[in-house]
Length: 212
Image (cartoon, rainbow, N blue to C red; front, side, top):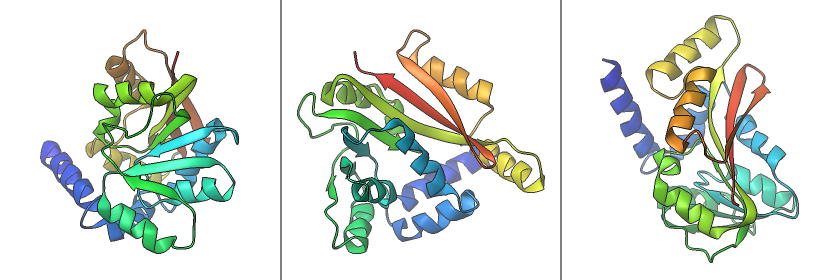
C-alpha cells in the first residue's frame, strides 16, 4: 500500500511540474501549512551579494524574484515550460534571467558561478551527471547548496499528522536516517556538509558541497 502511495505521489509531482503547474503554489501552501517559501528563503543565509548564483529548478520563481529584488546576481533554469510560462506572465516587468534547460546538462561555460542552489529538488540532484556538471560550472571554491527537505520536529496532533504523511510518501526521514541516507549517496569521504536550520515547527536540511 505504501509503495503504491509513493508511486502516486511521484506521478502527481510530475504533473505538478507540468500540466498542473498552475496549482503548484496552492499545493505547496497546503503541504507546508503555509510556510513553503519561508523554508525556501532560508537558503539566502548561505549567499553573499557578490556571488554569481545559478538556481536550478526555479519552479514558480519565488526565490529568484526575491533575490533579484535584493540586487543579487542570479540566473535561473527549469526544464518545465509550464513553470517558465507562469514566471514570465507573473513577472512581466522584471529583469529575471531565466531559461529552459535540462537540469542534468547545464548550458553554461566552465567556472561561471560562485554558488549553485536548488530547493526541494527532484531526483536529478542526486545523479552523477548533475554533480559533475555543477562542478564544471562552479568556480574554484564555489559551492553547491541544496535544500533537501524538512522534518516536522514539534509535538502536537497537526505536526504528527504531517510527519506521518511525509514519512509514508517517502518525502522525509528522521535526522539520523536522513544523514545516513545522504552519506550513503554522496559517500562518507565526500566534501559534503549537512546542516540543519530550525524554522517554526520544522528542521530544514541543507547540504553544502565545496568545489575544490
